[in-house]
Image (cartoon, rainbow, N blue to C red; front, side, top):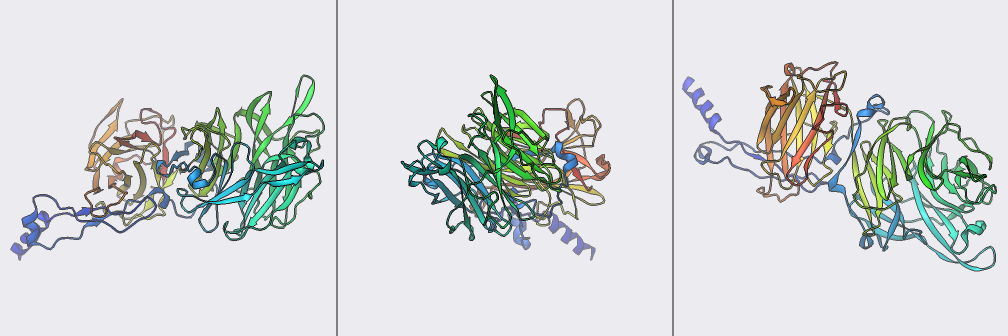
Length: 608
């Protein structure tokens, strides 16, 4: 019996380990994979039945963070939240996709069936407004004109043309898509308010067909914006350019309201709208008003409305912010009145703002300055916005944002250099929860769920990585997944771990773990510099590369890592992490700077 046990043990030790990694393209998880033999084991394999290979599918970030969310769950840790562009989603559709030579003013909405609709017009000041549909935000199919210019006899009896610009839209709670557009008489539009206004069209089938246009406002205007409240009430905000009668160069933000799903509007067509957002200023003894190009949201967890507007003051453009108060009602202003009282006028230089809020609480404000698209992340009250982020290298103006998931937004702006639309998806990195589970450290990620919270890096090149965390009573586990079409031997991923410190500085309780396609590279502890240390780390890597028979674009590697709890200083179930990848093409990129000794922008992991 003892001899039999020894034989079984020996055969087990010398049997081969087959590892393979399968997948399909960036947006699909397939079942491919092959068996990669360990060299020098042919004779032993002939004596024993081959074990089944480990097949790990690298999980794209778009498939992660799929669990349920709690509204305003991160309001207390927003200062550590950040955005990162997903480089693999960056595209620049132009004339061949959108059907116009110089697309401008893009606005993207996610429809109820999961597809996306984009509104835009041609040239800087449009004549007609168009739309396109996409299922993946990568490939767009132009559907032609939604609002088409046509000849008119204007209110002065002259031959003229009705033209359309600055189309925006909203997807209602029932799935209907409303598109609103500014129209005007082409010749002499400033003096023809009766030939200008707002039109609205509705689609009940995700943009396939549209109802007839209805006129909801009369007067010179630009830049309408639609918002539906949880009550069902719909607001249409717009730049009121009909002039107040006080002076000739001023504007402001006005609105009309619908309480029946967009069928009828108050004030009705031909009447003065509600003036709601206006800043008064004087120059050379003359009084002017401003606040234009509005973007308005209802803040999470209460009724307060927050508005971002563009303010033209003495020839310089600024971003201003305004708030309705807890009742969610804007004061209806007189023509010579400014408001609301709760405003942060001329907060910083910029123009063309667009405002969104994640369910977890973080607000994001986009704008352009010096023809560059910028984003700033703010707190749950949309009052305090921090570091600026400029993700696009192209130059243009009039960009926008669209919320497309609990952790994803799409940002877009025209590229006037090559006459295209720049767009990409952006991932929210913020505090994550560790999942309680038993993990077998073998490179097989099948026990990790898509509902796990994940962090992401991958804005510089096609190489990108995700980080997830689990734990049990003895160990803390990390799952690193790196998508990389060319995973070189010198490419690697790094996890930085630190306890919470009062001054957000690295201490000798901070660790660094490096892994690559070959497995664990090093474990280190921080002194005044990083030095090697034995942390009891175990790591297993599964490689996916061009040697696989499934010719996939999802080359890269999966690494499972465990570290004993006893090695970590976990306080109140929390540690801080930073995550980076180093790639031969894109170089190093990280959630937070890896050269800094500050952990102020590191991400908390809780639930340990």
